[in-house]
Image (cartoon, rainbow, N blue to C red):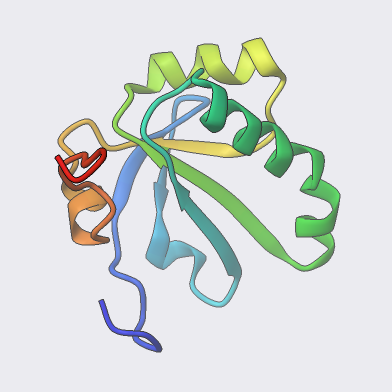
Length: 111
């Protein structure tokens, strides 16, 4: 991906028995964030914070979409457990995550 270029399109299953297609949101502001796993400490803080700011995003005309490789059923449980108000999309095959360059081998302490 190059800065200033359109984001790659995708269609993915999402929470609430829906799908999300990026190109269908063209013309709207989209906050697309990626995270590794539902219900982990950092990912939960992030999702709760996005939810707390829902009004600000709506006022700005933006829709918030989180994406991880977790299945939709796990996303639905995550939303229910933390009363989240964001769309969570599933990319179990990691195709979208790899296209966006956010799914790479984990490296800790240079390993």
